[in-house]
Length: 524
Image (cartoon, rainbow, N blue to C red; front, side, top):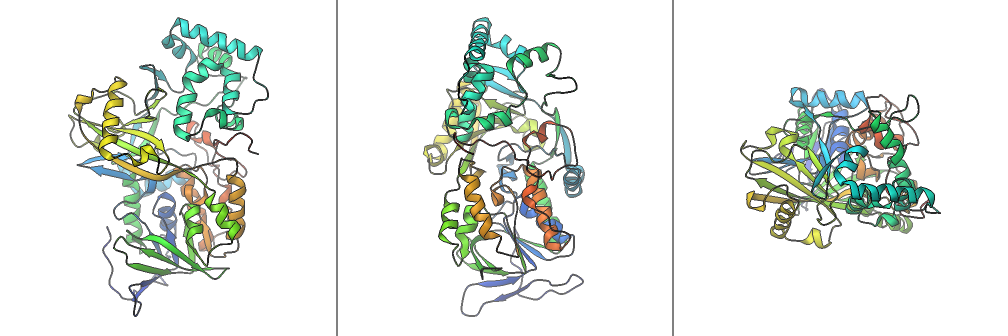
């Protein structure tokens, strides 16, 4: 954690260094920078890195008192390091790949990828391989799947409105209920019958049961000549000590280049005059306030929080639109297991409807250095929830007991071998993309366009389902706008869901491409 700096004025080769003064008669501290950045996740730190290496002063304000990286941070418990979800470092953008290596150097390791689906106490290949799946499901259930598929083809659901309709029509109801329904509902917190069919069409495009079976029999998921259904990469790069190592190193590099990263600075107010942002007010856990002034501002705050912070307040219709944006929250139950090896997977998708866990990370298989004792293992059981619901408000002790009970019930690890653990809650892990969010976001963007010195970046900062590398690219382009190196439309950064599954490409700025996200039935 950065210690408070002395109230002084810095001078040197880099122009416009920050000044710090105590405001007479109040607790506020005024700090002046060329650019003030709200949020110390991948987007905020990438923006600061780009500005700092171009000789511009900037300050990143991070609410957490200890950790940077947002959802890409790496937390620690008794020497065990763990992700908030898994974070592969794989991008089509060569510029992003180069930046990762510039920051982390030889601390990148290459890891084999194995992820499978757990269902009915069996492991199924992921992506699904129909022959493997039908064999493991057994003759009777496979026959039901085939009959269900034939029925769906003869008498498809019309009109095809929901995710459920779309999948049933292409795979049959039995296979839908086996491999699609449970996990989708765990992740998004809504029934598959309420999710729009267009999400399924984007997410599972180009694949049907017959094509998949014949493709598998021929040795691949091929269809038309020259066309191959994309499959997940078999290996990926990963920081030796977890993704937080990347962002901790970025923080340190920013400071070395003359930038600032201030921890324990929760943004509580953004002052403006209607056309420009003038200052950002932050508060630490002790209640002391800090005012940061600047010429340019970059926000990676959740859009709803950004609008709530504006002073004077945004117009009623803008505030109403912001309050209508939703978020899916997330908690991880980390279990320390008295066993050197548990299962070979990097992570497991849990399609078992009888347990509440949605995904399980095997941190030792991400990197052996995440586990300090080679005779032990650590597992992260991920639960998707909404802030304030029954799971979110459950005590840590009860969540640990739930995790022990479910890992035992699944036959993965006996509860008796779980010797310790902890719980981490991550609010606003995923923006919610309901049938109204685009309309609300358009209202908000229209008002924010009035501000000539405010840029937005990142997943929550733009309410877009960006992956880590796309969040970084939005921040890089925002920083280049601030530097006067161009006028980039950060909203056009490519967020194609399939980029993780294909090979490298330099195209990261394709207009009009939207990552596949679930939307409710009836959305436009």
